[in-house]
Structure formats: structure tokens, C-alpha cells
Image (tube, rainbow, N blue to C red):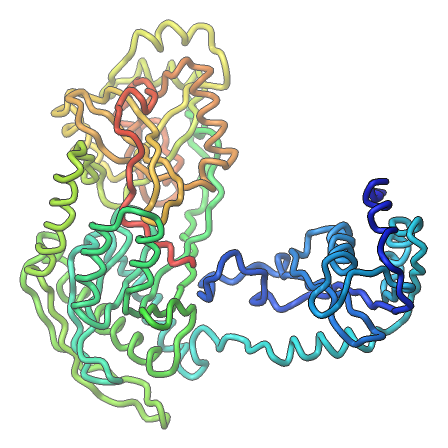
Length: 560
């Protein structure tokens, strides 16, 4: 057991010991009450896990009826925190109490009693067990009474309709087509809302969903401030100046296989049932004066439901034309909206239109910012829609198989030199899986770029200053193509670490595989005949590119 330093004991013994009896206890608080990290009063949009519920440590003077010290700690923190709070109560108590030692301490936890007896044995403080601590019970009762829980994320009456439209949006997945500068207006004329301006997020593989700005002014101001903002503080303030409702989606991390599935020389690969990607909708609102809310009030829930339904109908009517280009399109829809005061739905007309002129204006803002930065152009449009891009490791015998297969190949003398030694588990690779026509078209495009030269993981940060890395593919003509964004959690994950370690074992030699068979059991598990292209390349250090730290945009996590 950890004990107090002798010097600390000498210092404490110099204090006057009163005849007071103190009470001490540690109790769990609701998850929404926790020690603030700064002065912000913004409510987190993502609820904390049960295991991370905060605990409150209280030391009170039962004789005087006053709190001497209080601390909020994580539930995982040990008994040492209890002693730290006690030393605070002894030496630096809350006003008007004065520094002193108590004569007796009362606790209602046997284990804590024995622990404190060992720590305080040289201070002449009696530690006793009691079943109840009346004063602390009263204080905690007041704390819990004064705590007002957030309302439900969506009012119960309106939740089913909103969830239905949200699921519909997830299935439509407009982020596979639309960019975040392409604006769609939704004219409501209800619930004190004239027109909402919808921005679809997720084209770049970041958080997916739709943001509905309450005014065109708010949207345009936000984009201007993002482009002009430089410091992290400015960007955070800009984020909180948005005036919008939103429906985003949280997709839990799926466990991915570390290695490429075996490529048999005969027989068939065992069929693996296809899985669907789970999703969790996130609803909320932002306002310059209210900050962020991870929940909706009645009128907001109704308005968001109607806006989503209108957007879904518009997408189903025009998605083929939107796939071709973002031109002038419109649609008028009759939607039955939930009523605030009754169970009878209200029929309203909603007009939905694309806004190509505003889209061009927002796109030019980014282009101007790129020109000012004088940064090299990083392309994001090489990979086919819905392509699966996966980091894996190919066993050496399968490398031999691919090098001798009748497919499009780009072979490297460096791999030829290291392959016989067969060091490590295999050759690290990047698999790009799509449909056959798109895979063949991708191979043709790569040929036009003079093949693939190398891969690089370049340091970057999102607009809120969170560190990440951008996976860049350097083509033979020196063009740069983004193939992935890796956040801190991914970079620290075992899968990513092992992949990079294996790349070190192979002296920076890796490969890129292009495969068909994106649907069904072959998704992520292609058979030999699915593989159409094989490229042996190098991983290079980011210093070779000389890009420095990049800014990854957009990156709206909606976590405060």
C-alpha cells in the first residue's frame, strides 16, 4: 500500500488538530455531470459509456456542517484520489474553513476504512465505519435534485417518423454522389422556418449525413469563415456559429481481417455471408447563441422529419440526373407532417430545388483558398463509387501466384530481390475492390498515369486540429490521389501498426491489388479469378513529398 512521505507527515503534524468529526464518501454521478476540461458549457453530442460515469469525492465537516473539499474523478481512478481530496480538505479547505486535522473520520465503506487507517496511522486520526452518513446523504440528494437531465434525443411522439426517414436516407446514400458544396433548398414555410439549405456530407469518406442550414446566410458565412480561419480557436468558434439542424450517422468500427484471404490453387473459397454496415443516426442542432444540442425539441423534430422526407423523394426522382451533373432541378411534394397538438397529420406542400449557382460560389471559395496556399493538387476522384479499399498482407506463396498470373502487372526488381528470403509474413498490400467494368476502367486510368509510383502517409489535421494522416498514392506522372484518411484511433490500432511494421520488414516494398467481386461473399474476400491488376511499389516518407502538414477538409465530427 502507498503511504505518505515522511516530509508530508511532518508538515501535516504541524497543523492544529480540532475535535471535529469529518464525513467522507465517493459516489457515482449521472454521466452528464463531469469535471469540465475548460470553461465551455457545450453539451457533448455523443453520450459517454456507462463505465466512464464520473465519481464525486466529498469531505465534509459534520460538526460545522460545511464542505471542506470536493472532487470529480473518473470511475476507474483508485482510492489514492480519495486521499488526495482528504489532503486538500486538511491543508487547503474551501472557504471559510481553516487548515486543520480532524479528530475522527467517518466512512460507510469497510474497504475504505481499512485503507485510510493504514495511510493515516501516524497522524492520530481515528477512522470509523458507520452504515450511513446523514450529511453527505443530504448533500448528494441536493446535487441530484438540482441536476436536470437532457430531454430524449427525439421526443417520443415524433421519433418513429424521424427514424423511418433517417433509415431511408441511409439507404439512399446521396453522399456517394453529392459533394459538400452542392446545396439543395427545401422550402417549408412552417414551424417558423422558411427554407432549409441542405448540404450532404460524406463524399470524402468522412462522417456521413445531411446538415440543414436555417438560412443561406448562415451557410455562406460559415464557409467564408472556414476558408479564412487559421487558428484552432478561430475554427472552433466558427463551428459554433452555424445555425442548423442535422442528421449524421455514426458507423461502428468493423473488425477487419489482418491478412488477405488464402488464394487456393484449386477448389473454391468458402462462402462467407455478406454483412450489412450497421449505422446509428445522430440528431441535433447548432445555433450561435445556444451552442450545440444532441437532441431535438418537438418543432425541430417535425421539421427535420419533413425535410428528410422531401430530400428522399427528391433524390428518388432525380438521382440519375444528379449522378450526371448538378444542374437546375426541382420537385414539389405533398408530405403529411406530424402535428404538435393532435394525432391528425397535416398535409403540406414542400418545394425542393438544386442551387447550382450557390454551389459554384462555394466551390470557388475552396479553389481560391487552394490557390492562396499554393499547395499541390490532391485528387479524390480516381476511385470508383462504393469501392472497397483495404490494407492487408499477402503471404509470399500468393505473391508468387500473382506475379505469374495472366493479369495486368507492374513488377519491381526490389520485390524480386527480397521475395526469395521470404522475411516476415508476406507482402503488405492495398486492395481496391469494385465491379469488373469499373476495375478495368481503373486499370486503364492508372496506365494513363504511367502506373503507380509509391504510397505515402502524410501528416494532416482536421479543421478542429485533430491529428490524422492522409493516405496518398503517387502515380507515375507524379499526380497525387487520396485513398484514405486515418484518424488517431486508426493509427494507434493494432491492424494499422502491424501493416506498417510488415512494410518495414519488406524494406518499404508493398503492392496494390485491383479486384472485382465487390458484392456478396466475395466482398473483401476475392477469389483468384477476381484479381485483375497487381502493382509492386514502394512506401515513401512524407518528407520526400515535402507537403508538410496538410489540412483535411471537411471533417465535421460533431463532437464537442
